[in-house]
Length: 577
Image (cartoon, rainbow, N blue to C red; front, side, top):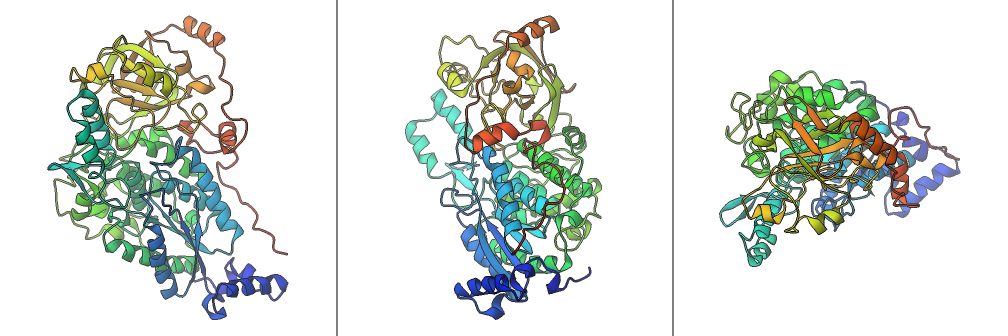
């Protein structure tokens, strides 16, 4: 690639001029103890760091930023670390999804308002990956994503335990009376053994693996455990490579295209990844003007079976996946589905990067001919439409109970989590295994922020009967670590007048996954009457970021981005006077 001159870099607008402003920028940089020779005439690399002491997934990223700096210095660049909003999944309430767009805005404006020529993006917990990349895509400077890495394997009493997946499993067993409070307390300190993101194929590893397959990380970076010594070495290599990318002007608009997203979808489906990725990928694609829809995802899901034997669809954890060869080994087995000509951040094509990749455990990383879940049994992503979800709903049919993939049952409708929690374990609740549990007003506007409320609890009286799955419907999301026959992202959501708002307890709901249908057996005249009676709830927020969110967020099938950020188009560089 043609090498850019230092004079052509945007940072030089700040540092190279002979006027008073240039003097002030150089003066203030020296105020921090740097010599002129350490920053003048060098590419400036921003390190966007989502480190936080309230995000165990990211609590090591301060150290990783130092490793990135080593690589930048070695390559002749000038590294600067910039803190950004940390959207750690566990502690942030009501949901990190409320703040994904906030992070995207912050990243874009951090890069625009400072003398930055390119950036290494440090993140990994669910919404940090799309948030960082959405902002970077809109700013369109050279970037590398440096994933936080999954935590070490967990084990409890001889059984592999995965973060999130087994929390839900053992919570149900506690409610059913099959384990004790003492067992629950013991489990609390043993399941999550180290820093890093969830060790299952939850949303974190789904998204980092997808962007790895898209060519936005160094090859295989998404599979390296957070505590492995290879992780800081990878971070250092990110810093070194980013300097070269700046001089090559290898920015997202030159690097990421429809081929990249297609390769990401192949990885997504083979991994049995989180349903949350459906929302994030659409938002990311729209930032670059790349057409991508739920139907594109459903088409790929019908071609690529679940091949990674990882919780919640399989039996292993991310550390096992890494030792089996990681994402490069999986992609090598899926080569027939990939577009190997797609460019990646290291300057090579995806095809070149996976040449020579080997699998060291064929049970962890299966051949497509021996999948974990055959396509006839279920898919990573099924898209449903019907009079309950005209614009679409999604489910992970590979993690659902086969007997519920075609089902008719009476709805039990809850208008809020509080109402659901009050009623769900009431012995008088008229519920059977055939009932369809529905939680609405959990969507982007209604909640707001579309929280992970969609894995509705099984009523305690059914748990005691041995029931562990039911059909559940929600206009919110579900943790990628969870499982079950859960229909999510119902669009339009109830809060904006979607048909889910018209459903009533006792109405029959019909699910037919093979046909891609989700309907309520209520005639059109009755639905019209109910719609005429329906009134929207008063806005929950009159001020704050949440109020902005409710006014400007799109629906799930459109990526839940803000209307004023969606799409491309240039934004002027800041004036310097």
